[in-house]
Image 1 (cartoon, one colour):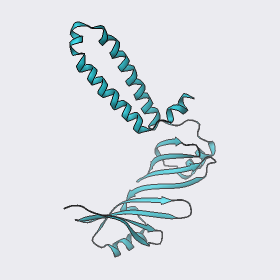
Image 2: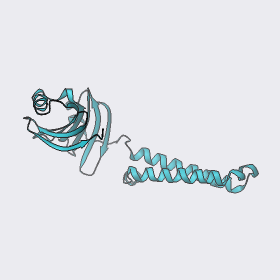
Image 3: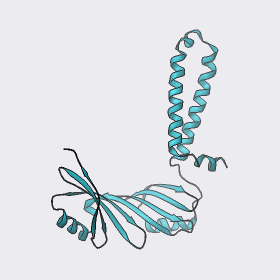
Image 4: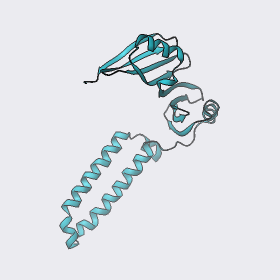
Length: 194
């Protein structure tokens, strides 16, 4: 029950709590500098309270910000290990209707989403432009000859794959979207302000 309650706190709340306790602790330290000299009883009672509150906040943050999840469905684990045999730095997260796993595989950072039955719903892969399929590299170089292919976010849902590619030149950078056939559309364009 406690673990379920702890997982409901989001990371922003935990960071805010730690920041508040840190500021409060520094304030108490400054306020009680003179009390240290005279061994005032307020210093003796406030410092342990602060340390206990800080310890609880740190433990909550580690619990909510990516601790390994126990009790992953055996079908999900079997599917994961069969598809991603070379996965490293694996972190599992559980949600009411799906599992989310983040890991590294070869030159890719991967995020995969599984339903509770063990079926892979979709994946998101992040990598450098050199690993794009050759037909897409060709289309990008043809359409944007003076831009460098920087980063790629590949989104796959089992039916289709979409590539979001960052292209850079000296004055601008843009995000373009490409499907598997190389049909390209511009999503956003930014000036570098040079």
